[in-house]
Image (cartoon, rainbow, N blue to C red; front, side, top):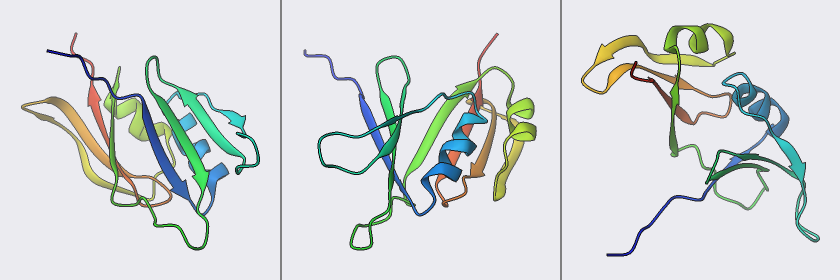
Length: 117
């Protein structure tokens, strides 16, 4: 059986800098990149996968249906430190561990799960 691993997630944003700032609040560190004549965008290496934030071009589809999840050390701390547009599910214990779901500034659902001790 061959191994498969996620290596790239691309989000499109009307305000890419604001979105990068939101994810920086989670602890992600972005670098600005440009591939050839393509648009300048933000990229973050997540240790085997890359999260990229591209500007939303007028004729492109939005990515707001995308749900993205992160494992964090302390859910409550992260929820307090990020500027979210909405908390859809406040921090609570679930069968997956302590979990919260937020909306980022562009409307993507962001799931945070606390790292098991």
